[in-house]
Image (cartoon, helix red, strand yellow):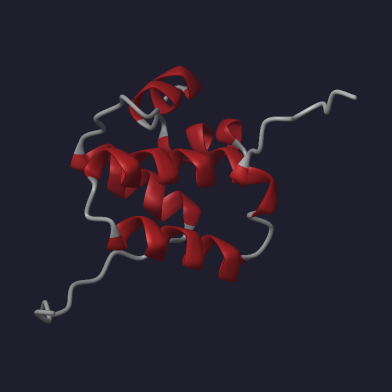
Length: 97
C-alpha cells in the first residue's frame, strides 16, 4: 500500500497574530537572514500577497522574489512588508549564552 504525501505549507497555520508572532520570533532566533526573509514571505502569503503588495506599493512578483528562499530583500522592502504585516522590529541587548 502506498501513502500519498502532501506538501506542508506553514502559511496555512498562520491564522492568528499570536501564531505569526511565534513563527517570526523563531525565525529571528536562527539569525539566518535568508530564513528570516523566507519566513516573512510565508507570513505575507498567509495574509495575502496581493494585499501586502497594495499596502507597500511593491509588485507581487517583486515580493515573491525578494522573500523566496534565495531572495535578498533590501531593508527598506523588509521594513515596508513588516509594517504591512503589523510586525514590529525591536532591539534589545544581546545576552551571551
